[in-house]
Amino acid sequence: MIYLQLAIEFFKIGVLSFGGGYATIPFLYHLSQEYCWYSIEELTNMIAVASITPGPVGINVATYAGLKTSGILGAMTATVLEMLPSLILVLVVAKLLKKFSDNFYVKTIIETLKPVSCALLLSVAINLIKPELKDIKAMLLLSILLILSWRTKKDPLFYILISAIIGVGLSLM
Amino acid sequence: MQKISLFKLFLIFVKIGAILLGGGYVILPILMNEFVERRNLISQDELLNYFALSQSLPGIIAANISMFVGYKLLGKRGSLIAMLGIITIPFLTIILLASIIESFTENLYIQSVFWGVGIAVIALIMLTVKEMWQKANKNLFFYIIFIASLFSLVLLNFSPSKTFLIFIIIGVIYKRITTPMEAR
Image 1 (cartoon, rainbow over the protein chains, first blue to last red):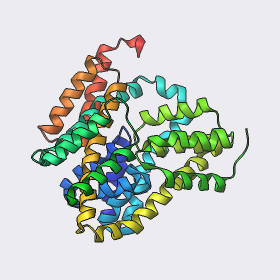
Image 2 (tube, rainbow over the protein chains, first blue to last red):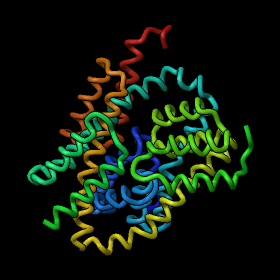
Image 3 (cartoon, chains in turn red, green):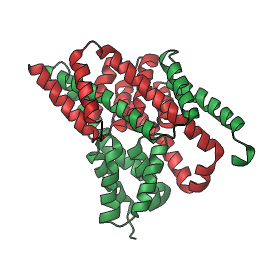
Image 4 (cartoon, each protein chain N blue to C red):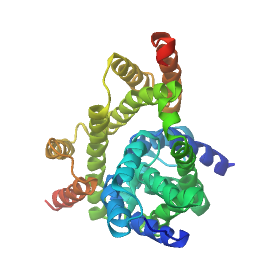
């Protein structure tokens, strides 16, 4: 039963996450609230692990969440089901490229999804920042990262490495 | 343009899945190198077109563009193989490494690494918002939907899928009313 739930939830993520790997995070937070498959704290650690292991973060974190929920079979279910909508869409889009992008409903849906995705990601950022607000070190690090990215966005790995190093550095002080 | 075997294609995507770290945006130069420069299997314009399409489709961008490339080279089988290839290494690493890393979560250094990475993830999410914001076509429709959906998510605590569903319906109704028949 849990596999079916897992399959449905990750299929939904695959359909609705716009903006790449980090866009799947809001859904994973929602899952932790709705099903108690893992705690928010565990999820935060999972995202950290997913960010420093090879592979796109969206795939890693799906595998990890599935693994946490119901072992290797769960990991497989979550990963493949999250990819399935993309696979279907890619096949359809690659075939009907012109027709697809000219369709009124397709255009409208994509146009609507963009502002909602922006809002969704922003709401997760707000939720993540809330518990850190009193932590001066965290706020300082976040400001430094945002200032560093102000003009040009560097590779995500750059921010992750710098933050990991600063984290260890601070703990030694 | 040359041909490529299904197995070879699988191996290339396994390799790409292993190189990618963090976000999927680095995949474009890697694909450019593998398929345009080294093997001449696909043109640069096609690849850029797929990259743009991959960003406007839901899902993991790196996986989307890989599946487009797979489809272009070997059809449906190709896109399935590209998908399986790209998830192989991430899948194995998480299965093998997760339990090991977790057994160290009490360790002070690992905790501080996680603390730092946690902050970096917040920054990366904010940067994703910034990027999407800059790329979006910001008309009145965009602002209204943005503010209303932010309100529903933060203050009314709507679930992500419920929010999408509601606003897609609102969006379609709004556009149907405001767009004249001929322009649809």
